[in-house]
Length: 486
Image (cartoon, rainbow, N blue to C red):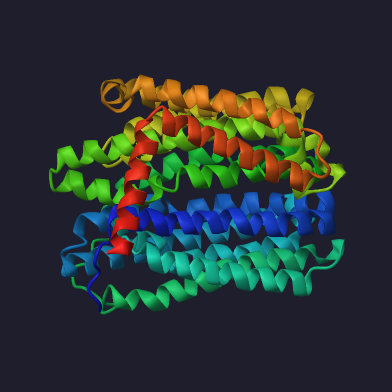
């Protein structure tokens, strides 16, 4: 076993940011090709099967993807205890995964909509099994973001090559579904093999597998509630309207999901570090990091959501064909959730969970899930895809407000109203520039030129107004240049 050294938050953020940018670039490359090749029906089939499989995966993982990070982070400096904890979580996960797989296979046999695409659903079932071996929670708990990033990009590149080689017509949707699963399975197998560098596979005595049940259960219930207003939209659209509607919705949320990954990139590296700070009673370090994280979320999410509300049509046309134009209005409706999810990710996952306030997070996402489900039942029959998008927006708003109210005292220390005002003003002025490019020669050039001008105006205003986070980035850049010259 190698010594698992923790990199700085800056290095972890850079690695996670590279990983996130790759998640941004690869869909930009793949989605235009796939949407033109498979058309809304084909992409809808894959999105529908993937959404259903995500429920089985979530059931099998039982909250471990998040609980495991915190559990590993708390014992990462105690090798024997780390070995024991990881083995307990792995065997516990094996039991729950087998149970989830059994339910998934039974549902394929009993539900007619699932049986229509039996082969595609079975392909996704392979991914459910191999999620057990991924042990991503181990690597994140040990803050091994360099390995996670390199591995992920390698398998993305491989799946990209396979897509262009093997997917050429609408009938190839099964092949594409298999490629997506293969990329996940390959990465998970590699994770399992590589884990021997950090833990011992020799069984520890007196394993207490079930001691993780109730703590993980709270994280599982959070995941269930969150998935209701993320994946359930696609499932309900598929059941209530049809798979073509799922294809439109998938296009509408594609960019949103990419941007949320960018906004939450910093948060992705904070949970293990903040859990460690709380465990070792480093409260001032905890406050300092959360203040910077809040500033980053506002700095990134507000302009991104605003820009893509205005530029939704060229964005859809760039990623897809004109057949996907019905996705434009739903995309505009879900774009504000970039801000809301960025904030709720920080408040809930990065602050409340390290503080041991799982019940607060669980309560917030449960109320959001109930609202989303109820609104979907009412709005999807009359509004269709736009109804699902609007339901998600209101659900995310409720979750964020609930968590913000609970942390209202801490928010007073994190929020700098002057900086929020500067971000708002810069966003408004930058947005005005986009109207110069609304009818450019092509969607690509419309986005490329408008985004460049938007970004320059936004950053320039924040720089000259001395907004704190941009000033902090400037200091980091200057320090890096000085070190390079030295």
